[in-house]
Amino acid sequence: MDLELFMSISKFPFIHEREFFDSIELKQNKTCLDKCKEKDCLVFLHESNKNGSEYICSKGYNNYLISFPAYNYLLNGLIFKENNNIPKGRKDARKNWLCDKSSIKLFVDKLFEIEKHIEKRVFETTENNFSMFHDFKTSMAIFFNCTQDIINNLPGEDFKKKLEDSDKSYKDLYNALKLITSQLGMIDVILNPQSIEFGNKRRINIYQLFEKIKILFGHLSDKKQDINITLISETWVKDCYCYESIEFIPLILLDNALKYSVKDSNIEIKFEQKNDNLKVIVKNIGPLVKDGNEKRIFDKFYRDESAKSFSKEGIGMGLWIAQEILKKHDSEIFYYRDTKETRPIGLNVFQFDIKTTE
Amino acid sequence: MAKYMNEIVIGTIVSVVGSLINFLCTKIYGYYTGRIKSFFWKDKYIDLLKYSSISDFSEIKKRTRIVVIDDENSFPITIFENEGYSIDKWDNVKDYNKLEDGFYDIIVLDIKNVAKHISEEDGLGVLIHLKEKNPSQIIISFSQHSYDLNKVKFFQQADDNITKPSDYLTIKRTIDSLIETKFKPSRYIDALDNILKNSGLSSKDVLIIKNELSKSIKKREKPNWTRIFSSLRSKTDLNKQIISLSNTILKFFY
View 1 (cartoon, each protein chain N blue to C red):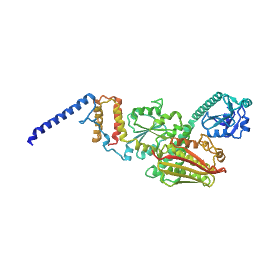
View 2 (cartoon, rainbow over the protein chains, first blue to last red; view 1 turned 30 degrees about the horizontal axis):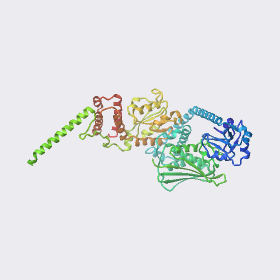
View 3 (cartoon, rainbow over the protein chains, first blue to last red; view 1 turned 90 degrees about the vertical axis):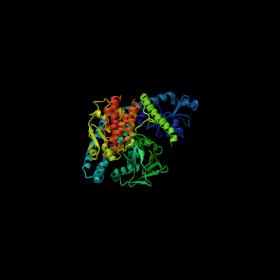
């Protein structure tokens, strides 16, 4: 549930992303806005993710966390009837903020019902648009067939050899089609995350995948003011046992790195193979994710302010897809930045580990 | 020597009579229990894997019968044919018996508009039914509907998945990998053993079937199923399953 909708229906004042909001029925408690110096409620909001978590702040007021998949809201400055931390005098002065915990719970239940309904409608709308998506895939298939037929008519022992020996333009065309197919596959993941696990796991070399995507993005990086992509590995990178969807990871990380890299910079992809564990580190110089948002950038539809101001492109799905895919491989992706860096541009690091055993 | 003659004769007679009694006992036991025991009272088992099977990939590739059931023309059939694959293309399920009989080793199946005439659930219905009949049948899901939450079952029950559209090299990799990992004699022999074990047939009947297969491999001749099944009291459905699996097994030997 996004901020706009939450604001329009919330009965209680709340905090979202360190900002205090009045509700339509009740303004922010003055203590929270003016008198409280500690603002420890913000720490609680930052550290807690569990829906329904409660917190009594340093001033004795009740705070209640409402957590949706991509948004957290903290109802703040409230006084539950059973709250004995607030002296009677102040309770009387803050009568409007006195409430029943059960009424909060009821309100939250209603919110989740609304959220469910919205999701259902979104799904229905998506389904209605499926036909267009389907038609697009069909056209892509025709495109593929034509391209493959052209390559197949070239001289050579078999299709692979024909493609390898063909002119650069043929290879570019074929690779571009593969890129579009992969991007279509990512839409499948957005609509149906279970599609990550379709098909069998197979032996895939992550280094080679990154290399392939680097070549695919060759044209793009030329356009992006000579951004250089370097792959570094001191040892041989072993194959991983992965679902086909793992190929989206290099696609997403390199696409992001290219999108959010400053002029004439270098994107470095480092592979560290230790026993049966492969660590992949992607570094680039670009806008730094704001403090406290390091985990949120992996939320669905979330784009950090720094990213929005640097590039208009993107809907905030790439990193979410990457995280979902890695979760299905018992892994996780992390974002790191130099915490001492005060300028808006600096070193961004994305890192994940993956097992190279079956 | 003559001194021990009596003992030798008696010993020989005892051994022969003992062996004869043991032999008769195994037969009587077999007659009443339907289980075949060897002279040493061990279950008799014919191991078909002892025969050397074809291991050359290009040869196996040629022998693997593939059918693509898709209402569109998005599968690069011609390229597969050019590269030595034995591949057919159907716009819909035009011969269900052929699928059920295991004529095709790999079925590449679309989910929509391919089997509405035989199943309300279209491709999913075909997949479920074929897998029920023969769990070792290799079926690859090939559909544009991987985004569709209502069709998850189709993709989950298939042996592998090819996203539609996909390029030739990606499709080839999936098919080759299935041929290498799943199109193996041991997998089909295990499947046959399982069917026979759960069929309710006596071990004597099972042995007759396995023996026929063994003979067929050795002599490189087709098994005489009519003769075999006339002496067995197995059901038609079971016979079909046995023939279908046996035909696949024999592909690996001659």
